[in-house]
Image (cartoon, rainbow, N blue to C red; front, side, top):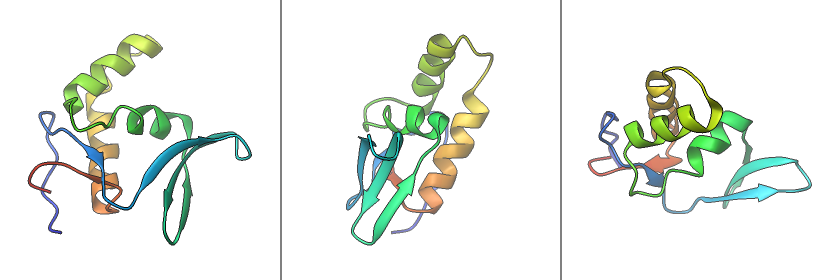
Length: 95
């Protein structure tokens, strides 16, 4: 899979082979894959739970800004999605 650059119009989704869930024993969201597990911090979990392939990154950032009454988050969300794409956790059209 070749990675394309994420933009605010990209619609990220979990990549094939990954499962996102709340893990009570860890007290956090995790990303499960056949070889292991990634423990996610609260911000990463909030972003990944919105990566359904329908929402644009700009939409995800706007939702998080409203939920957390935070200032502009688009650059942070875009940076996280880009990193997750490089690690092959997420995919989007063209990725």
